[in-house]
Every structure is written in structure tokens, then in C-alpha cells.
Length: 239
Image (cartoon, rainbow, N blue to C red; front, side, top):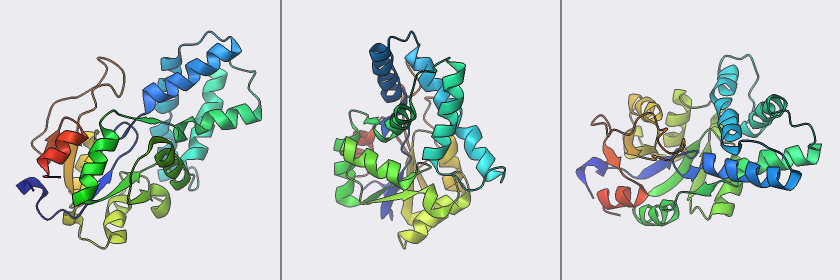
């Protein structure tokens, strides 16, 4: 085991973008639906618009403008709004509900499952996502993700980056924050985790936002590990 992972007993993973390709998966679902319905729509822009509402919606919960609201319901609120913006008016309630569940069907990156299986040999591996438990459970079944357990902001009623999410994960696992490593493709998530005592691993996902659209792909010495993908992370931690 590398010195960077010394003392680590468990790893928790950001999911959207880090474990699964949300943009490509949502765009494919929209493209398939558009072809079936005869719509002319830019599926990638629709996916981007849907995701763009994610942080503002969670901020409304954090500020108490909204009561605690799980991600499935926030996704549906955003969907209803962007259907209007994209002038899509022919979906039934059942159609909208099924489309909203597209977030349960996201596809993993090509290295994800193999990398997680290797890491699982040496560490407890769990989600630490803002996605709700049912969403993450269904996604794991759909994508073959071998989690030991599913941890979600829903359990703590606090979305990341609230400290309750990071520290709550360590508490549930009955370990110290310094024995827990946060794995994410997003530097802000890792910086918040580090602030609360967790170890950190950056995994680069250059295609998360589409080709040539990632804001920052540079390694950062502030993190304990910088990895190309989950297989590289496994290699660096001796898994």
C-alpha cells in the first residue's frame, strides 16, 4: 500500500461524473426518445441543461427555501422546467416519470467496475453521493457496481459539501475521518472533504462534460492521490 493510503480503511466515492458518465448516458436516453417521437432536439444540450439545475436546486434546500427534498424530486422539478424551455409538450405523466428515472440508469466509465472490484479487496467501498438511496441502489443494480454499502446525503439530510455528509460517512463506518478516503473527479468536493479530515483521491474524468469541455484536468498536490482512473487508483493503493 502506498504511503498516501496508509491507515485508510474505507473509500467513499462521488458518483455522478466520477463513477458514471451522466452526460453521455442522459444524452443517449434523450436521443432515443427524440428519435421515437420525431423530435428535433440537441440531446447533449438537454443533458447539460438538466444537470445545470442540480446545484441551484440543492442550494434551495441548503438555504431552507425548500424543505429536505431528495434528488429524484429535485431532478423532476428541473425536468418539468426544461421541458418547457425545449418546447416539449407531448409527454404523458408516465413518460415524464420514466424519463426522470434515466438518472437511475447511468452507465459507468469503462474502468469503473474493474477498478472498484480491485479496490474492494483492500478497502470497504461505498458511495457518498447527493443522489438518494433508491437512485443509487437502482444504478448499482443496472451498472453492476459492487458497493459494500450505499451512503447518501439523504441519510444525513445534508447535501455535500455540508460537513454532516463527510463526517456522517465516517461515523456510520465507525472509523476516524483520517481513515476514510474521499474519491472524486471534482476538486471542490475533495477540498471540502479534506477540510473535515478525510484523505482525498482525485480521479480525472476528461470526458465528463464532453470533449474539450472539462474545466480543470491538472493534478493537484493538495490531494493525497492523483489518478488517471480507478485502475490507476487501485495500482497506487496496492489493490
